[in-house]
Structure formats: C-alpha cells, structure tokens
Image 1: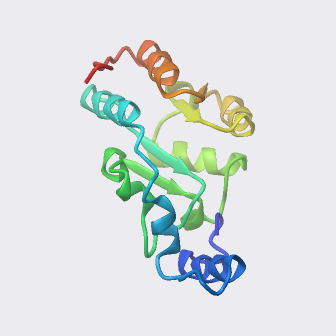
Image 2 (image 1 turned 60 degrees about the vertical axis):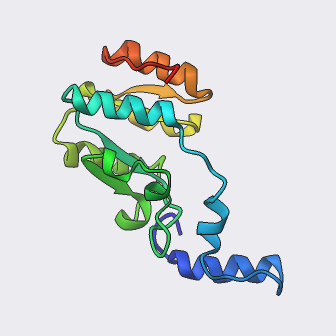
Length: 158
C-alpha cells in the first residue's frame, strides 16, 4: 500500500480476512484511525509557519487516501501547499528520490527546508540533500525545536 501496489480498499479486505471472519472490511482503515488524535500543537505551529510565509509539504508514507483520507480526518490536509504521498508517487521514505521530488514540488533547495519525522531511518536521506532534520519523539519537544528553528511561536497552553 505504501507505494501504491495495492489500494486502501484492497488492504481493508486483506487485513480483515487476516483478523478473522468477524471483522468487517468496509472502511477498516478509517475505523482504525478513529481514536488517533491530531498533534494539535504541531498543527498550530504549521498554521503559524504558513501565516509567516513558509511553504509546507506533507511527505508521508501512505496509509492510503481512498476511501479514507487519514490526513483529512485529523484536520491537517489543507495546511500543506504540497502533498507527496508515497502511494501516489510510487516511492516511500527513506528512498532519497521522494525527498528530491518534494523539494522539486516545493521549488526550494534542501538548505531552505526542515524535515520532521518520527522514524530515525528517514532522516539521513533528507540530511544528504542539505535539509535540516528534526526527530519527532514528543510533541512538546518537537514544537519547541521547530519554534526555535523557524522563528515562529504558538501558545502551548491554548
């Protein structure tokens, strides 16, 4: 599913069959995401960065987009100027080509970008392109580091 060899509907069916006859495949991915909360401080920081003139890209290894778009579910899809979703482009992190594609779509050099990811293996390919990287482990720490890097701030108490 990450690189588009199967779609989300096919994943729903295959995963439901692995889980047993009692599991309904319809919108299985959507049901799995119902309890996933948005990282609201990260989203607020993204909004503040966009208002400050930064261009934002969503570079994500896909959970599929159809019939359920998890990025819309958590309210972040519209925050980004560019969407590079592995399923749609046939590439997945940490393949260096997906980072290069993201830079091309943003129209920016790596040295003008910051990449945030929660998997350490995904950082070195970005760094090789001159992109500043941030390992996201805890939301508050990640937001603090990004506020410092970008010169943009949000009220964490809100």
